[in-house]
Image (tube, rainbow, N blue to C red):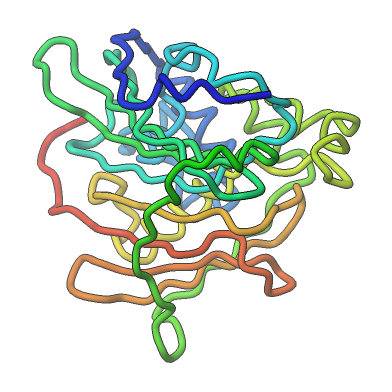
Length: 288
């Protein structure tokens, strides 16, 4: 089994991605919005008096075109896990709309026992040519290392001293993964016990991007006064699995104005999202 290293540096697209207001609501429910209904009616309803519907910013992470990049190689899909994710918005995400999506394979790195595949995608407004969002993803594929490639570059991040400035607790639901998969990620690792066992897991695990969305909600609540249009950029590393039903605790440390670092831990204290960074944007006057 080998990876297709000839893909590195190639840009694919455009592929067209269209979404509806219902898609935005399904995503918000998939990442737990509505648990405190009065706080998130803008994300979960379209007909509440005096409340304009909003798309939650991390919805951009699922708006790529899945078949845009050719197969990365010949490997067992059960050995692939999400390693890192970033998302940056250049304008509030429209509740419904269309975008041209481009995706580039920026690197394949040798991690010894596995390989790290890094991609970057952009969503472009087809009418104006403006970039709406940019996402970066890293995937770790167990057993595909040892090909003699370069090691992945490592950034600097340290957990701040002292107690966090904000702590937000969420409870995921036992059926959380089954709900989140309606956003388009039908990987059986999150629903099929036999497939999960092939990957070395005792049960289907929660999508990493679902946990990521929960963290985004905590950051918007803590640092943006609940206004999703003030979301600027977010990045984090997936460091441990979450099972549907687990409690998530988001710890946020404010840095410079408009910037913060964060971690997400399970209820038992295990760090599941690490090396988190978040940046706000100025309050927007544009109606998405």
